[in-house]
Length: 292
Ligand code: FER
Image (cartoon, rainbow, N blue to C red):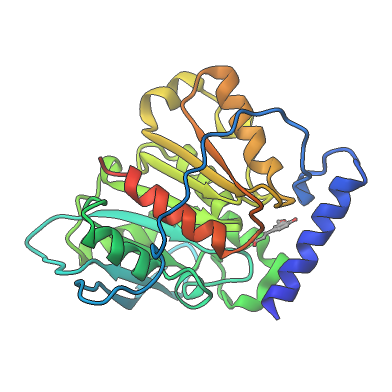
């Protein structure tokens, strides 16, 4: 059901692109922006396959009181292998797409726990926990909201910063400062990560957008102060499928960054579409770059 829905959304985006209509941000028109993509290096075989004989992390569903929404909300939390409350951990907030919820990464093909377990086993990531919230900040935060819930995605920053982050930092052994906090997400969650991450550089030093959706603000809005981003952001990293009709949301930002000398990565995933092939790769790469 969800796949059909997303396919329909995408074909609308692609049709608009093909018709070469003026850019309508709502549809994230593919823009003919000439950007210099960063090099695509494939993930190694098996990066997303469960491996025998390695230590495994655990995923637990937590509940917290949301002040801005006024309800009890849920999030999944991945704790790495041998999580030890005597140590301190960084936190990656990993956001879902418009058809998803706090279970999308886990249940719809993202295998974030497997990707992270493998990275841990190979010593390729810093100690971190991964929080997968529900980014639809509304009393009814079920998946049924669809396009109608775009507004609820837009106000998730209040819940995230006001309630979820304090909950995580008080219930788990985290550093809690910006240098140990990252935000990334897929599609609508990619847009949220760019919007919230760059607007709150005192909270997030590392920002990732995977196939970011049309909720992504335009670059001049995202980056009103070029010097501030250069100083305060430690990583601005994006990936998008080369065949994804939403790629214009990423290229417009990459073009702005290149013009203004802001370090920014955008990888075009060869023949990639709007799906977990690209998003798993995004998590695999992004996780290795943060907190180092
Ligand atoms: C749109 C096309 C796609 C849009 C959002 C999406 C808000 C999101 C897709 C996803 O999260 O997978 O026009 O507008």
